[in-house]
Image (cartoon, rainbow, N blue to C red; front, side, top):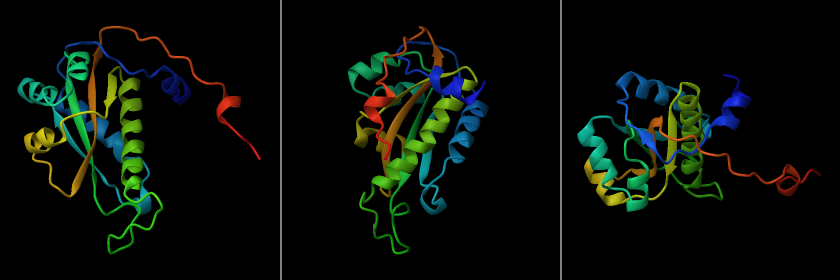
Length: 177
């Protein structure tokens, strides 16, 4: 699949047909995320994958009702975190980017984009979710306090073909000087 076709074809999916996702597929997706650039090659993203039925159910219970319902039938959840104090920082962990710890989330977003595009290229659909019970997820997956939970990513086989939402024109969003 050509990269432009992959970018244009990827959609957020909110209805899944259950199919188990093997550990090897999850590892492939994470490897795609590892190729994302990061501040000074800090490689801040960390990943927690739920692939067993029990783990999938437990992560699903940490989502708000509307996202829990939309992701019923997923084959896996990948919870992404950002290791604190590595991105946008000096060697002492002091932020010197005007974004503060925002660069950690930026790095995480780049990795997630790689994951969702690669997933699409091998026939899987995804939904990126930023709303979840942070405390419950942290406890469930034993996520240490030095990592910020950024995204819960649903991965599975789509049960519907979502429509492509309209995009703003390039003229509306681009200013060239």
